[in-house]
Image (cartoon, rainbow, N blue to C red; front, top):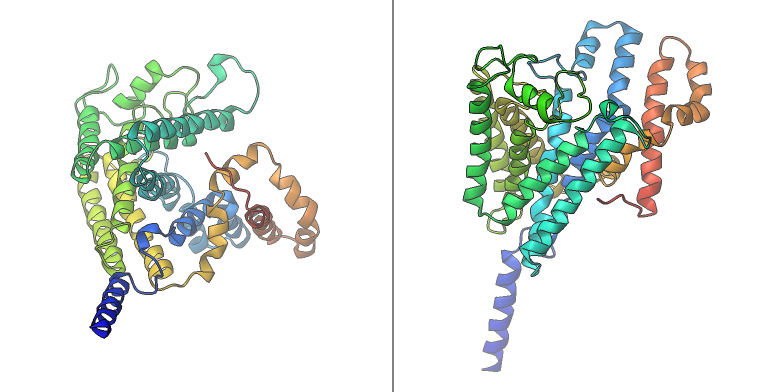
Length: 392
């Protein structure tokens, strides 16, 4: 009898172990995603100076091929898409992916929704204030010279509203919110315009979103008559955050294998890219307006990148190569705002100007661009080793 009970207990324990994902010592739901920090770092890498490496190479070599690559690290004047346009929405998407691992986990531990909403609102408002500081510095200016819209401000508002939707709705309702915001924004611009322009005008002067921003936002807009981080175009940006939340919810699903999670992310990303091209025929892909087709396009690319990073890093276990990016991703906001308080060009010249002089023209500019990124990374590595992270 005793031996049978021991066998039964052993069998039960074995079954419980077999239910866990392979190569994991505890349920995946409680693990931090290495791939999330790595992908965030990969995203920030391109705006902490890496894009200048390609611009310098193009200038030094005169190669049309390298020039074409470097052109991808610029923004189109209006309609169209370059890879550089992906950096901002990918960051917002990843903020959404983190939500089920942070806000969702706290909810499961028993924290009240009202308590978590206050935390989310606080974080959103801090990002808005940081954005104003990044735009204008810590100085007193006339109201007319202050630019209120910002990259961090859009992330803060979109993150805040997407998280509130997450806290008070189920997954199906979140999907409905995602689609409704995109369709509603499309209809808003399709059947309205600035005074004196035909309905549906999508030029910088005539589109309805820019007109409303010019009317209600105090201070100055980035382009005078338009701001790429304006208030109205933040509406579809909420969907970008919601898409990240839906992706994060999928990754936390204990009932799906890791391979299936990667596959579902990739397939959905491809579907989004196709839908974006179809919608582009009527509502052009446009980062300045954060058009609905733009949301689907960058959302598809974000899903594909997340699928790739998750599969390679968290499923296959190849993590060492991504450590370089993880160091950046763990302090992404710090490195973004650091340029307002640290003269990185001065620091780079202080340590490495001799190297640029040794190399000489024309490749000295390439070497100095690489050193510029290296100095920033070493600073972040020092912060990482000291476990100092800027949290909002």
